[in-house]
Image: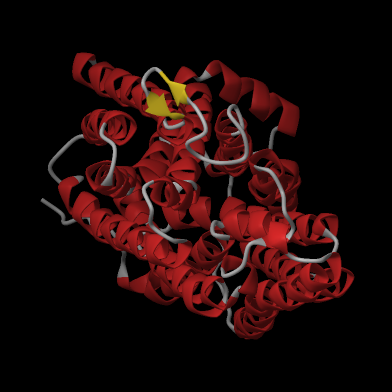
Length: 432
């Protein structure tokens, strides 16, 4: 029997170059999550206003994913990547004038444009990785590439911890006791601290952009006659595995962002400050990183739909522990969810695009990237739950637990849906 390699020797260099982009957007995701808490303190926002950071960040994915897919249908993968890196750099560098003006809206615009770039990169890179070899190993190949995403996330979190959160003056004072001039002085200094990692990131992205431009990237030419975009969209909508996959991806990304963003608020509610809370998020990222490699290995022996169902049910169980077990055990349960989540994004992605032509995959990829908007909507709803009793995190009790604990009912429901999707895919394969 002929051995089917996950990655053939012929595509090792292109695979490595594209895989590096997964780490790049992982960094952006991780460095942005703690900014919800940072902006809340520096600019004296309520939980809903602070959650607009995630709304701007993940809303950019929704806005630009389909235009990006249409672009790469007519041009090369390489050009799509170059456009994405340009937008990424512009959005990051906009943090410099945003910090000078001190306007929260300006920061949101910068994040919005930055994620235009990320939408281009993800819409291009994911289907490109899937196409780099045999279709039977496509999901494994994407899981392997996605395994490097947490490396960037760990780097982003360490930067946020050591170069942002640790240096915020507003973390060490009671704003209510200060004069307006004293507040303004601290606010200006702290906004400069928030600005710096994004400006440096923009310069790093420009450097990577130059490397990509200078390297020759092979293209997979689709020999099929191209259908109209609308015809492909209608065809995809009729495929239940794909249509349900898009919805499932939206629930997954929402659950992931909620579990990672509000780990700070959960920790603060049990008396742990933001700097120490960052250590728990770091452990969650490491668990997530290790889980990616473990799950890539397990996919050799366990059906992807079945493994998705098992880990989703386990994630739901950990989420219930997060809600109803208060204190440090609840926090560790929240950390443990990250292992279960490590499989989900690339596996849902691979299942949803399974069996599609390359032309269909380019448009289908846009739908799955647009589903990242779940990361914009879900945290906003969670922020609204946190504001029920006031701007604190333990102002009132809901079903016997504080509002910060109860707010994790949203990721719990998301994991239940993901388990149903994984189970349905598995059962269809068994029957067929």
